[in-house]
Image (tube, rainbow, N blue to C red; front, top):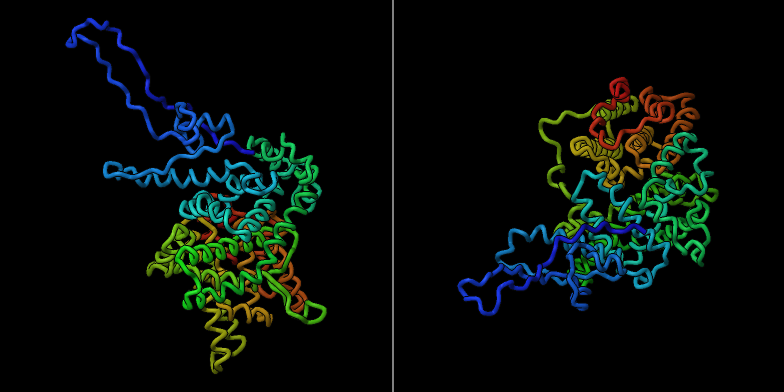
Length: 513
């Protein structure tokens, strides 16, 4: 398991005896200033009455002896006010570290699950922050571990998401990668990741691999089964989660929660588990569910589960929970909402948005909606305009912050009416969803380049165009398809601001990079 790096102790007091004799006159007696002994050591060192080097989150003694390193609560006095914020940040880190340094038996989880928890903190948290959004990072790094301790739903979601993201790091079996990347790319990736000391400690030198947890858990086959098991446990509660999310607002109004803490806990649990479920399905390479399912696709014509429907439930969760969480430590999940709720007056839409607006105008003209529009058609056009405007805001946020997550959230924020329209295979609605899928791929919302729920929808959309129209109906759709499949283009991690250069009609500016 990964260990926390400890620094050399900064030193305690140095005791010294006086070199003068008892008969020396008081005025001539050598007096050395005595360094005051610190009383801020950890509880383990205090009980043993030994000097603590006060390193946090784990002091040197506890690190070497494997003890739980706990520090007494810090009381802020008037003279310490200026250090309060810094100390609060250290305490947040300490609480999270206390969890990670607890014995796996005390947490009532297996050694492999203990490893998953460490892996989540080390490798998965940056997937939400991209090392750019520090408010988001703080929530996932410090608040989610505390929520994890009390919520089985969050626990299973964390395990499944962590196990999924271990797949590219497993060097035992590479069979699953044959169809997703060439050998050279695979070996470079596994070589770089395998050199990490933390990754090696995740998989090697632990007897748990030969225990009842399953032999060779680092092998993909076993890890795949583990991932599926955790996710199915999480997904089994999804229907309950979605129904609760819709009722959360009414539960608040009816006073169903005895305390504010209960309301905050339930709101945070639903939001965090919902985000993890959405992220898991977006990253997963093995087509668990489609982005959109049509009734005729099922043998009995029954309604199938699809990602866009799950997103509808998560949307309800976010709407119901945000007023409560905005005033808590989870507010980072909704940061900059006020700043980006509308576009600045000086904003000029990006080429992607301009193209969608142009295509909508063309679609309206082709369907002769410009002369006489009935109420139903008027509502459809309004939904399309609102959806494009929302994407414009998300796009602006992604470009300005060099951070792609706002784009991914678009599908969580769209009006439910758009989901209904897509189900009818409305041509423009399908195109709008296609653009979103392309953006997810080029912005790295997938575990592997060539297989994901977004790739599946792009292929379906291609086949739909060919079957219905005989070829691609629009050249911009073909351009974007070639960008993903022929060019295999993705943005570099620190260059998401280049989304501003993405022009579906002319990719030359983007390809000059």
